[in-house]
Image (tube, rainbow, N blue to C red):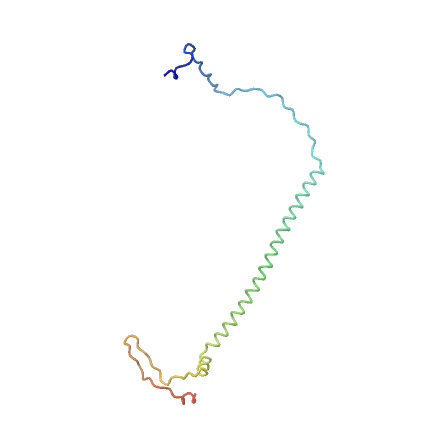
Length: 143
């Protein structure tokens, strides 16, 4: 407990100084303006001209980039036109090859024979409707 007792009990501790409610003001030494020379008209003209040249270069760069994009767009449009023409050609060939006359000719060349009487299968009842029969080679000769 000896550590908690003040070192000199006979002297009271001084109280902290109260802080003023307003900050203290002090005077600064007199400041003198530094003498400067006014800007020359030539300097102003050089700065203005450099800004104008820089702006023109930026506009030229932007215009060049847009022109390149226009060339790419034109090339892509030509490619789309070519692909559309190819698609139309393939569609025309497919339509011509899938016509009934073309299919019948190809079937005959492959040795297929047309049926004399059609036969149907009723899916609800499972019965065969019609009389199935063999097709003769003579049927092919008559067509």
